[in-house]
Structures are given as structure tokens and as C-alpha cells.
Length: 144
Image 1 (cartoon, rainbow, N blue to C red):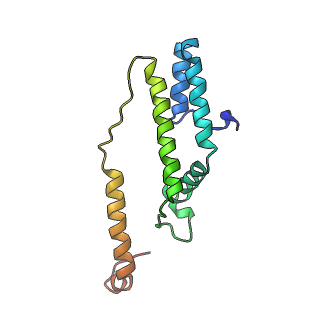
Image 2: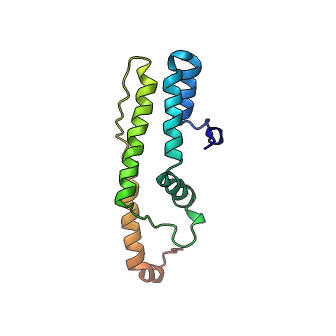
């Protein structure tokens, strides 16, 4: 897999982070940097990554391009959940490699409730939409 085909300019790019540290730390970080690139290549070559990227492009970022049902979310299989867990472990290893050179450890806490709220309210909307579509139209609501 060509490591150069993926953009390194994304704000949250682990590759960009590793490259930046390598440029600043040089040979002290070279082995960890190469390991990081290998982890990222493994992730990008996985079936789960391809599926998730496809879902992102069709469902999450561009829902309007999924003409069959733009508001549907499909669950993941047990194997996909296991693969996602392995990806998260590799992300953590990359972050540990990047922070370890500074004698720090990466810790992730994400108190942002927006994803949970999106799922909660999307589910309620979808339930209402399917149960009450014609009633809403008759009462003057313009649902598309």
C-alpha cells in the first residue's frame, strides 16, 4: 500500500503528528515513526477501514448521496466490532509512541455529548417519521 496516497494535512491526522515529531526529533524517533506508519498502513488495508470510510462518505458526511435510505444506520457485526477494537489499540500505540518521546502518556477523555445526542434525537425523529408521516402531512407539516 502506498503510504503517500493519504493526506497528511487533516487536523486529526496521526500520520501528520508522527511526521511532525520525526522532523523535530530526528533519529531519536525514527524507529517509532516507522512503526506508526506501519500501524496506519495495516489499519488502512483492513476491510473495516474500507467499510467505515464508505459509510463516512455515503452516510455521515454526504447522506444525500445515499439515495436508498440516507437516514439508515446499520449495526456492525461482532467481527467488525472486534476489528474496530484492534484499530483503537493501534491508535493508542501510535499515540503512546508519539507522546512517549516527551516522557508523557496519552490519555483520552471525551466528555462531548454531541454524538450521543445525535443518535438519540435521530432515533426519535426516525420513529416519529415512520409512524406519523401521513398524519403530519395532513396537519400541514412539510416533510420531504
